[in-house]
Length: 151
View (cartoon, helix red, strand yellow):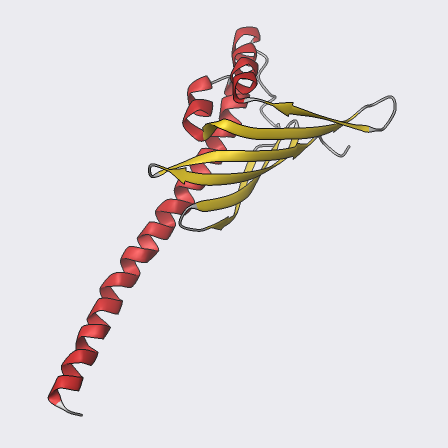
């Protein structure tokens, strides 16, 4: 191998070795940030903490959900605005109506890309499918589609 080709290969190998760890760190930080946004959303409702909702949810959020009427067995649906999320969290705190300690509380991250992520939150009220975006380096929930418990 010629000297010029050998040094080029060495430089490429060096760049690959130093670039991959940085990419892996960014991916891990993105995953952690997206998971934390979903956990803040869940805790915001569970704890009545509006600061966590503000930190994790885009004010222009689109949230829509379905629940089953116990008498008719039919599903109904309704949107919930950002302000309604804050109002709900405030009512939880004011009334001290926190979920039971054994209430479902699970966050699952399905996929993270540079700018978008998706996941699932399981809570006492049912299942929320979450779409997130990165805004100024911070993960925010952009859309939520939920369904009440199946039981």
